[in-house]
Amino acid sequence: VSAMRLRPPRAVIVDESEFFRLIMGTCLRNLDWDYACMESGYELIEYFMRSGEPFDLAFIDLDLPMLNGLETAKSIKLFAPYQKIFFMGTETVEDLPENGHFLKKPIDFPLLARYLQDLAKQRRADKRAA
Image (cartoon, rainbow, N blue to C red):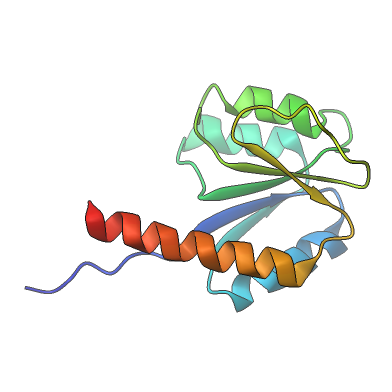
């Protein structure tokens, strides 16, 4: 009997800055995470309308043009009510939705890497226990 191989954890990066998406994607790839990049909240909502499959983690910029990060999160909760979200911004935000955490820009990548490694370990342990 062959053991089912656990797929890598998946994240989505939603930020209008191509440079920022590239840096975040490099960090995720170096930690063996799969990821998707989107430049607007509308793109993320469209993804959920089409597939509905949640990510292990969503990184959403609070200052997205047109539809900001909080409005985007409110919309995707209709499709993925338990989606874990890291809101990113230069100004600290206290009043975040449930399942939401805050990452201050510029990002502390060593700290983020430790969190992502811990999350991946927890995910593996949860899958083994299931």
